[in-house]
Length: 264
Image 1: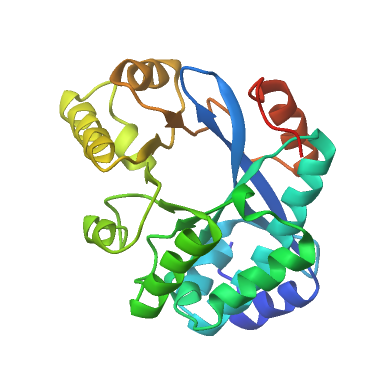
Image 2: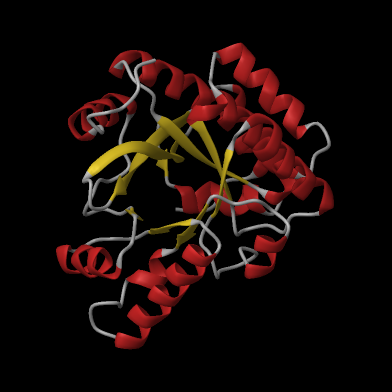
């Protein structure tokens, strides 16, 4: 299906025609889940056709104004959903949400996050931002992320580490709590020893910096077993759980919540 135009995407935002999904992030060793990453996985067209992310995300990622408009809509919806989810399950679930460099670079970004959190009732202790690898981030964006982390206690994740703009230099200036490896780093670990050595080396780097390391794209039990043997703390992928609507995600999290999870 052809890519959508920016005008079509703006109209979909105005009419609230994006569907939000959440994918569990799994704690290895404990076999629990209390964190999920949120995606805008479907756009419903004006004729009710379903558009997947490749139809709209590339347009958003290359358009600063559209990035900001989409980002604010997405934050509001995601905040609302996690607050409802926490109420439904009766304990604290952490929302992990991707933000773009263009978005973080706005001077008002932190104030907008605070405003949305106050409006929706979201606790900052239930929020982590994943910095997308699709766009660069400038000095203002770095300052904003440091403020979110240091003043508000928002956890920060360097997403798709080693790809795009998600590079090692950012670890020098932003106080990340976690680095996430994209599926390109994990897809061949069962067949290529070098690939496994690379992700183990990245995990060791994370440990030296006191960071959690999450491996994404886990699709087989053999991959998961290798990661557990290598000492990984977190994993994400279709083997664990596909992106789910809120109702399905709620049941998944209730089933696999840590036993000592604090009540809201």
